[in-house]
Length: 122
Image (tube, rainbow, N blue to C red):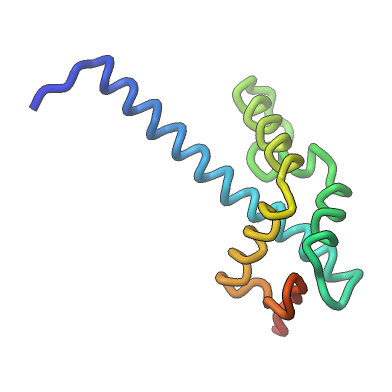
């Protein structure tokens, strides 16, 4: 089977883009988990609003450092960091809730009543 070079390039670009988005999606879960841990130090039960509040307290540099080296001067790294910060800042209530449910399925968070969560006892 033969494939044209242009089609192969499109396929490679699509796969790379999906890979980057998959990586960023996982890192968004880490942003939410960091906010969950911070909210846990203040509240006994954690709500989605608490997590959104603590995500707002995180600096752009702190969020960007989850995907790129903090001292990187590579323009692609800087662009990736800015894109990631923008994605984290624009997460809706439902997006954060879905990430929290992912944390529940991974055992990192417990789903209590309705939209109340807590950290598991360790």
